[in-house]
Image (cartoon, rainbow, N blue to C red; front, top):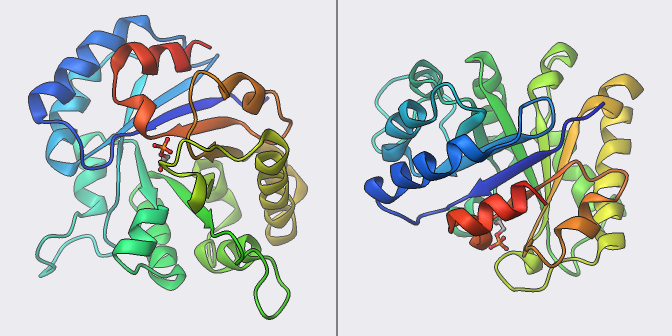
Length: 249
Ligand code: 13P
């Protein structure tokens, strides 16, 4: 059985004090890990303190990005080796904002996925989709093309640590979530692509999250869909009460 994941992505929000206070506020009110995985992504300078605050609770901490070298002269980058050493569990890779604003492409994301796995991290690989770009000129679905490159060279045994996020770009931060059938279509396509790239067992076990304007008004319908195993939540993960309501919904 696939344990659902509720992941908050704070993006470039909060201060260190607010981040730690948030963790302290929610950590004793979370469901057991057998029922739900709860993950929070934050800016790199908060992560060590958040890991410390979450220690002994079901909450896992996620970085919002990392580089593909473990160490070296890469000013401003975040080392996957250092993240793992710090007790960070997940790393978000290929988020739509990284692709659009920071021009990250699939080849770069693929290197980061391999580096994260090499260092024992659990990558949450985001597959965005831009309205009107669903089909490329080669008539292969946009999302399929992304996955073929992002997951190139990943060992089947490592796929147990990979989660995929399906986030239509137009739904992110817009207040307009994809309708549940559309969201299910995207996640279903991702699962089928994983089956083609790896095998049916891996496709059956991988967790696929929907992200884009998830709120208390739509989470229940989204989570009822067969191929949606959880949600990646931006705006509504910023307030502890609203995040807890989503986690426990
Ligand atoms: P919103 O929930 O604010 O739409 O953000 C979604 C997102 O980008 C999560 O990674």
